[in-house]
Image (spheres, rainbow, N blue to C red):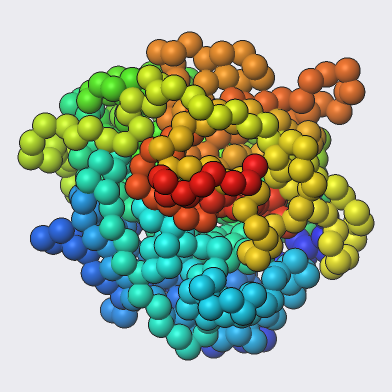
Length: 560
């Protein structure tokens, strides 16, 4: 989205300057310095089928005046990586320690409160936690997990945890959960972008990828979580430069800020291979990752995308490594791949992101480095990945390519820019709509836009009628991408995802709107209401989201 709030860049640099020192002194959300070694995220592991932890939702301010949000355990562990096995139970006791007045002040500086739904309907069945949305309201979405959308599980439409209150999540992972990377983040409509950019995000790993991809067994595994954050520029530079990004970025919280772009440091053992497990936890920034040695993009071996082993969608219980020299990651996407250390004599080795062409109305995402890769003769202290006992499970969706479609739907993205200038109310509106229905901004009290029945397999064709790229995401399930712009993807190249880009329209009325065609699997146990939306979170917060209802088998099928 074009930056529609004209003074946003400079305002972000001045956020909450007065209370910044007090917040910084308490440091509930610590951050490494630029140029630091990339630290591994802290790890928490399930035991006897359960991972039970407490998380506090906290706020702080960095030295540049940026608002930071974080999930922190009572002993100060920030954004832990949560390791579970298929069939495990995850219990999180969440306490919101962010004062409402402070959150409201932050949002007003960003001009984000105008689109918040401040009151839920008073129907008791729709209340999960608190009943009214306030600027500090928080919840947790367990992104990509095939878990229940009921209250106290992965429910985001009505779940609100307000300042001073505590809420208990109890998430049961199915025994057929695909092994790989998932993540958690706030998902209150209207504030999800600012809270995710503040850094309140962490990784979930479902163990067992080595059972599907034997090539990764025994490799050191490195977890990398890439985040964007409020932009703070050198005052000598103006915001109009074509190469100026809309957002700064970080790697495991090590900042890589415009204009200097001082890379972080990744140390690998000479002659080794590592299994890199990467989450694009950006709110709005699209990435196209490359590992580059002396100017030459390296071929990496992709083992999983969005938590699903590559090449395993046709009923097999073994995946296939996919070679690639770059990996496009929309916000929320994950990629897991094997990387070889730089060979002796390499002068410059880096992890970088390439320039993104997101369309004339999109954010600016320029090429920039993330980390310099250096080598050492000593072993690097990383956990080595091992297979789980037993043979590979038959995970959900691994036979989706073979399933028969029973329903077809057409949907489209659209957007309208109504005003330009700082803090203009409803400066833009964003929609995702079933073709033939009225465009409607998301409201948690809206009826479902789509109703289907448990056991269905549907095909959706999703058009992008805008001049910027969008990222289609649906909760609770994965989908198989079968065609792009109506050109079928060869069956052997198809893959299951939970987020996928839909290219931008060039504005020429003679040209067709870009589209993707996907196959969605509602044969699992999850029923109830959940959402689908664009995972560029500024777009979601401004209305580009809708509700789907999955009825239990035996219920009459009603609705669209």
